[in-house]
Image (cartoon, rainbow, N blue to C red; front, side, top):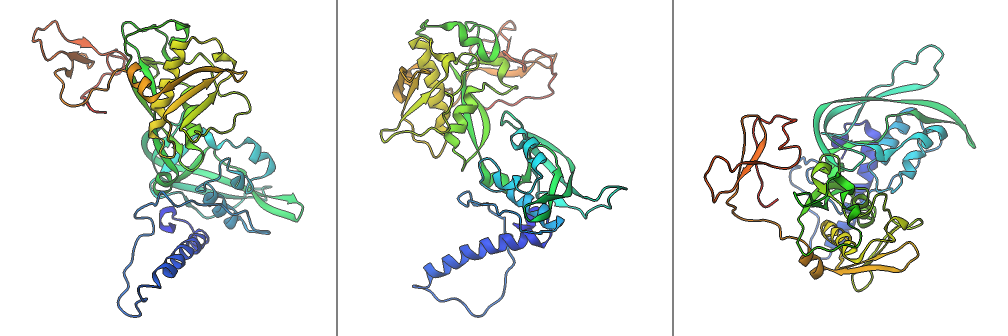
Length: 401
C-alpha cells in the first residue's frame, strides 16, 4: 500500500513486512500440491488494486529515540489501523495533544492518502519540526458519520517537539488537525455503509423534524408508516452493530432531518455503562435504554424497535431477528420480531410506478400521478427538494432505492 499513501520508505517497509507474512502463509498451504516456479519473467502489480475487506491492521507504538520522520509516518500508519479509540495513534502525540485530539470529528478521504513534505526550517525560537500533509480530497465523513463528496486540494501541517519522558527526550506531535485523514483504499477497507431508518413525514405526521414522534405517547395507529434510509459509515471491525444503534439513537443526519421523524424520545441513548451490544444464541438483541424512554407506550415502543430491526439489516456481522427494548431499571419495555416489524412498515416501492417527477418553472421538484393528465395535478414533494430554497437544474429519481 505504499503507493496508496505516497510516503517515504518507512511506511513501505512496514507494509512489506505484513504482506510478506501473508505470502509466507500462502506458500506453506500450497507446498503440498505445487512447486514454486524458479524461472520466467516478472510482472509488476499494484499493491492496493483491490482492497481486501477481510484484512485487519494493527498499529505499532513509536520506537525509542525515533526521529521526526519516523514519528510522522508511524502516526499516519496508526490512523489506518483497527484500533477502537486510536490508542496507539495517541502514543505519537504529546500528552496535551493526545487529550485535545478528536478523531471522530471528521474523516478526510484522499485519492492516494496523505503525502508528507520535507520538514520546514523552524522559525526563530522554535526547536520543533513542521511537516506538511497534502493530497487531493475526494470526500469526507462528518461527525454524524454521513459521507459527503467534496473534491478539493488538501493541505495541513503536523508540528513536532521533543517531549521529556521516562527515557529522555522523545519526538512527539504537538500540533495536528482534528479528525483522521486516509486514502480511498484504506477507507474502503476500514468503513462500511449502513442504512439507519426513520419514518417519513407526511400530511398526517406531526411536525418538528427528528423528534416529532415524541408526543405520540401510548397512542396507536393501524396505518402503516414509511421508512426512509439514512446512509452512514461505520468502522466495520469496531463493533458495527453497537455503532449503528448509537447512530440511530442520535437522530437523522442534517440533510434528511427536515423530512423524517423518529419515534425515540429526545435524548434517548443506551443505558449508562453499556459499552457493547450482541444478539444471543436465538438472535434476540436486548437494547437497554436510558430513563428518557421509560414511559413510552407499547405501540410506540414497537415502532422504535422496528427502526432498530431495519437499521441492523445492513450490518454484515449482525444476525438479529428480534429486538427487546429495556427500561433504565432493566425491565422489559417491548419485544418485536422481524415479521411483526414488516407488518408495521409500509412495503418499499420497487419496479415501475405511474407517478412522474419533474422540475417546475421555479426549479422545484414536483410529483404528478401517472393516472391523471390535468394541469392541476402536480404537487411539490415535501422537504428541501420541493420548497424551492435551492433551485435545481436537473433531477433523477431512483424508484428502487
